Length: 208
Ligand SMILES: C[S@@+](CC[C@H](N)C(=O)[O-])C[C@H]1O[C@@H](n2cnc3c(N)ncnc32)[C@H](O)[C@@H]1O
Image 1 (cartoon, rainbow, N blue to C red):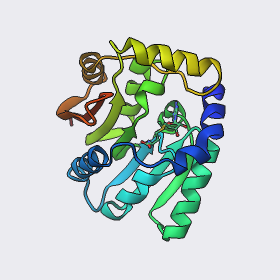
Image 2 (cartoon, rainbow, N blue to C red):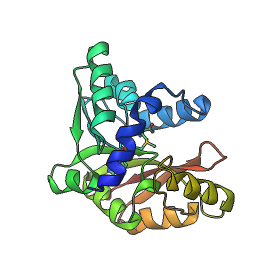
Image 3 (tube, rainbow, N blue to C red):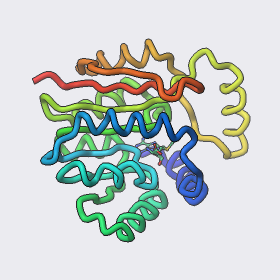
């Protein structure tokens, strides 16, 4: 598990929890598109769940959601919110993508929102996420695609130097889509929500 990344997200967890969703229309749209692929008897894994907002919104649509993250502080906030909401179909798991994959369980759907651009080795992360999907199930992700955005690159690098930004992998939409396909998944729906800075929404099905 990348410990500096874990420490960064622990440190910013309270601020992250208090921050409003930056583009509510885009968020609600991708939530609805995600729901379209979920069924009441599904068992779902969310990777990089943060403070559990999305897991809690989807909890009523599926049988069970395991919401996982590397940050114990993010997870603690999520668990508090779940207890307040009386959500008994969500549980929280301290795990990075690779540890979750090593546990060997597979899921009807694996969700990863605003996560893959924060992982150091994108092909490895996508392969690990794909290994968690049951044949016929879906990996549903949203990823900031910041290749070709030099100003954002400079800003993230400068903020990173003073501990105010995480490490970011800069990938283009085309490269992300190519790598999702290379992980053995078949892309069935895409979009960009929001358009700026671009966040690529991809629903990809595991053949089988
Ligand atoms: C930008 S936040 C997104 C949180 C939530 N998915 C959302 O859309 O609001 C990224 C989250 O990914 C987690 N994270 C970063 N690297 C991770 C990794 N390798 N495995 C699992 N979670 C990770 C961070 O702790 C953080 O909670």
